[in-house]
Image (spheres, rainbow, N blue to C red):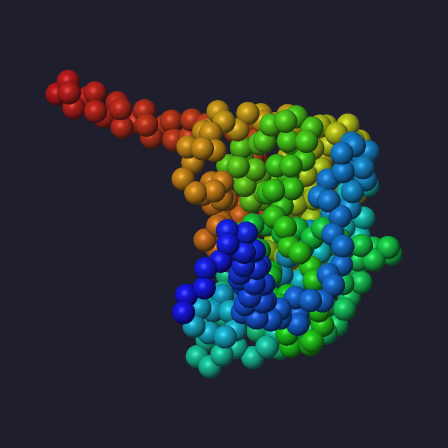
Length: 357
C-alpha cells in the first residue's frame, strides 16, 4: 500500500533526516580521531616574542648562545649519532655584552663497537678532547642538563630564547634529546638559528637584511680564535681554538661588532676581547644591507636561503677555513683582492713571449 504525503509533511521529514545525518557524521568524526599523545598534552612554558617593538627592549633583550661538541658524527644507521663531550653557553645582550658563561666537559658514552677509532680521529682533528683518560673532571648528563636549565632560565621562569648556528642545530638538538632521554629530565628548550636572529635585528632597524654569504663568512672567521678569555682554560692552555665555549663567545663578539653602531650601543670589555686580532676591539664596521645586490631576490632562489650557508655547512663542527699557524695573525679586512697577481703576470708574460717566438 502506498502512502501519499503532503508537500509540508515531505519537507518536515526531509529536514529531520538532514539533522540526523549531521549528528551521525559528527559522532563518527570524534570516534575516528586519534588520541592525543600524553607528552603533547603537557603544558609547555610560555615563550616570549622574539623581539619587542621598541629599541630599548631589543637592546636589553637577553639571548643565550649554545653549542655542544661531540666525538665525531656516526652514520645514520647507528643509534648513537653523536657522543657529546663538551658544552658551552653564554648569556648576552646588546646593552651589556656577555653577561655570564657556562661550560662543562661531558662524560661521553661508550662508542659503538667498531667506531672508537673513527670518534677519536674526529676529535684529534678538531677539539682534541680524548675519548678516554681525560685529566679534567667530566660532568654526567644529569648534572649538565640541570645546570644548563638553571643557567638559561631567568628568575621569572619564562622560557628563554636559545640560539645556535644553523649548521650545528641538528647536532645540538640531538645531544640535548639524548641526555634528556637517558636522564629523564625534560628540557623544553627551543633551539633557534643565530642567522635568523641577526637577520631580524637588521631588518627591524633598517628594513633590510644582510647578505647570507657575508654573515656566514663573518661567523666562520677566525678573528677572535686566539684572543684571551675566549676559550675555556684547557683549550687556552693547549692552544686549541676549537672550543664549545669559544664558539658561543665568537657569536656574541660578531653581533657586538656588527650591530652596536646600528643600535647606538657603546662597546665595552664585555662586548669584545681586549686583544682582538685586527686591533679593532673598540671599533665597529659598516655593513651593506642590500642583500639583493649580492644574492638576488628570494623568489629567484631555489629552495630556502640556507642554500647560501656558510662554507662549514657540511661539517659537523662549525670550523674556520684556512686556519693560521700558531702565533700567526691573519689580516681579515682590507686585504688585497688581487691574490696571485705575481703568478698571473708570469703566466701572461710567458704567453706573450711564446706568441712572439
